[in-house]
Image (tube, rainbow, N blue to C red; front, side, top):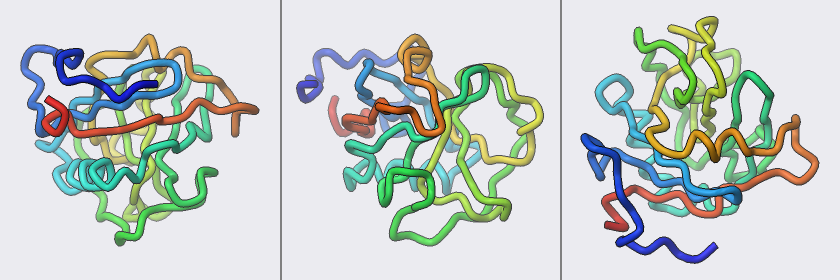
Length: 169
């Protein structure tokens, strides 16, 4: 996939380029509006790691039909790693888990989110208030729907490049 050109980047109305991620994956482009209003520390972490190219060439290592697609392990690529930065304190909110919601993955410790995140295929109210909501897909759910399924998928789709929209406009 070629380097995205700024002219090809059109954000949905109301999207703040400084708080929008452009995730170019093997099947296409996903645009994520960060919820820095409810999870400011987690939103800052995703932007920091995107700017450090931490997510480039990272696989979607856990993709479960009817549930979610998980990625963000730039250390090992298999769901067991994080970044060089300390884990984040949970920023739980009353924002519900719906189709397109982006949440932070963690261990059984609520304060263990680091770099991994997931995108919901469907509603997941059982996650409400227990996982930090960090964003929502505003464009490209058709691309999310194309991600190869599996835990891990046999030949996983990957993040080709993830950038903060403000950096490429």
